[in-house]
Length: 182
Image (cartoon, rainbow, N blue to C red; front, side):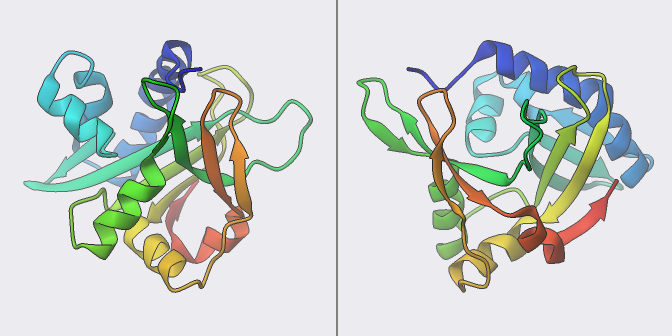
């Protein structure tokens, strides 16, 4: 099973365009926003940046803020939704391929580039225009360092229902790394 879903991608893009971008404009007034994940659908350079974890570039006063983002729908059973990174995804021959989590850990260990902010949002319901129940802008460098230093621990690696697995963390454990919240 392929972990990429055009339906899920379309939903996430609608959420960002209708809900997240207005929030970004509130956080960083006067900014311009480059939607790398949208541009990457037609541009190979942007696609490589998107596959490296970059979803948005906020341009403010000639400087750039690089953002990775993930939006979630509430669970049908009403249970708590945790923060996760993609851990493993199915490869082209059905093999497991290391994903987002491993790329980020390698980047921080080897002083390589990665987005400096990670935005996580939980929508109020399944519709893209419902608004957010929760919306956090995290300092990704601090999260990754805390994982490496074992200051925070994952709650497990679980299947996502699309052939991929995620590595999950409690939202409460990540609160010290929040730089802005809705």
